[in-house]
Image 1: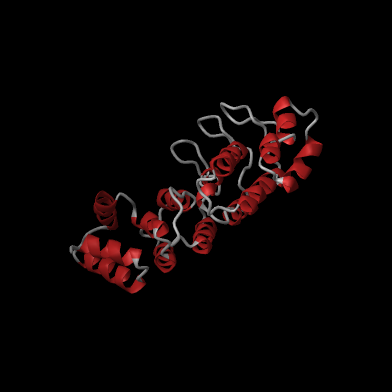
Image 2: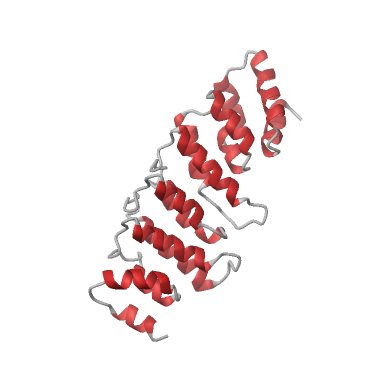
Length: 243
């Protein structure tokens, strides 16, 4: 196992002492941080800081943020995007650690509305990934409390509440991801609306409104908040109400 492999293993194990040792040994060989990052990314597909976020290696991430050598603005932003993204539901995923890491990165100075290559913000990523979390509202709440723009628009013309509608439909419509808490998804919707998210937007392709989605899936708390904001109930909402 070469040094880069050992470094990657130490990050996955959240072994700060080993990470420090590996980086020190590489520095003693007069290998610059830039070269270490380039080789590490070629081997693992991620920057060192992002790798720490992927494995929720809290102690390693804190060490890297303190050292600053491997925590430039682009890398810290990428780490926040990654911690807000879940590609699949996994039992070993520690959501409290994920929220803690997101808070650390924001406190470190990462812009809460930093956009990725698709123009998506951390809030959009968190909402898109909500069906893979059992308590997605914790992360969404942190981002909103940190000043996330609930009406931002990405390069595809989608707003956070539209990602929320898609997430609700993915979970509640198919019920493939039974681990997810519908109540948590409803809380995400409430957080968005109470933070000022526009409620007159429509779900792309289907034309559903937030109220229609809430009614369709029995989110009564959210319906109570949205209904007074809706001047006219369209046929989709009325049909959903009677099913």
